[in-house]
Length: 175
Image (cartoon, rainbow, N blue to C red; front, side, top):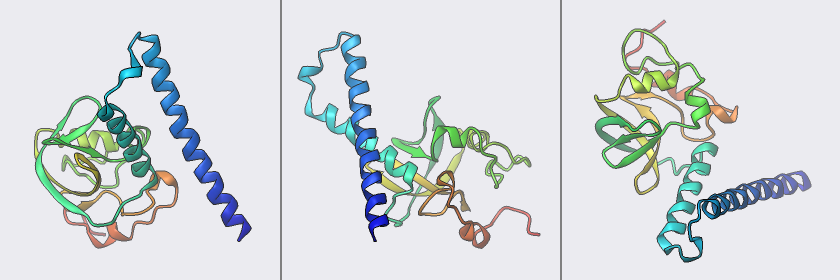
């Protein structure tokens, strides 16, 4: 029981340090840029904090597991993917740029890095299922009916199981 309490305290401390460090770095950058950060609007702080909270939830795999469907044309601004005004998140940048996809989402006949599979879908209509971390921010779990990842702890957290993938393979060759 003591071990669980100690682990919980460490996790809380790590999250607190992460949030504090992010705020200090942001304030220092604004100070160096000569911005007057003493008169920020309330929405600036709220939006910034919400974005940080969404990133943490997305990386840790925190979701309500009530998936919602979103259909539209996928766009990419060089950093993030969107359908309309909704920012789609597929995990940390280091993951999507280095992991090979297990599914050929863009149906070009090749299994590529996740980022290349996603870029192959840009300017096409896609249907994703995901969890809204907040208004305008969705963590994606399925792409065009194919499982991207399961709800819960993600593959980049090194604790992933593929039971959904086995149950929901639509456009893929069967062994």
